[in-house]
Image (tube, rainbow, N blue to C red):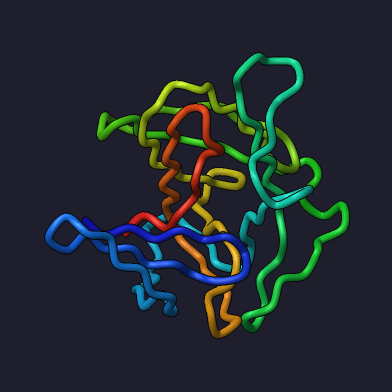
Amino acid sequence: AHWVTIDHRHVLIQEAQSGHGVQRSEPIQRTLKAPPNSRQDVVLIPAGSGEPLANQSVNGAWQMDWAVNEFKSERLEPPGSKYSRSTVELTESINGGPFRKAGDQAGGFTDLISPESRTIVQRFAIDGKRVQVVLGRDARGNLVRTWEVRVTVKYPKRPIYSPEP
């Protein structure tokens, strides 16, 4: 088994070897090939605290907020109101099932995650074009960007967001 956890400060790679866990911190080496019908000048970043928070109005649910940012020369730049009317769309695959539309919102996205344990793969689009999600920075300070986000939900723990290989 091999998975990656991002906590906005480093990348932690955990591997199972002969039943024992081994942990090491290293930068992610991944190909960021753009899928068809995508754009690379705009990304989504975690908004607010930058991590999922317990939702106060839906018992047991978590809330993750995403904000639109411009991406220029490996830098993130807040776009002001430029994308406030843009449609941010989320499609999801739950436990390996088919991708289905999970909603759309204007100017950003607030995702409510119910507490049952499962794995979700998320894809985001802005105005119909796929965009990357920035999950944090690796150990060298480089932005960790991905076209698909793996969300691992294990109640009662906070969901873990990682790049989908």
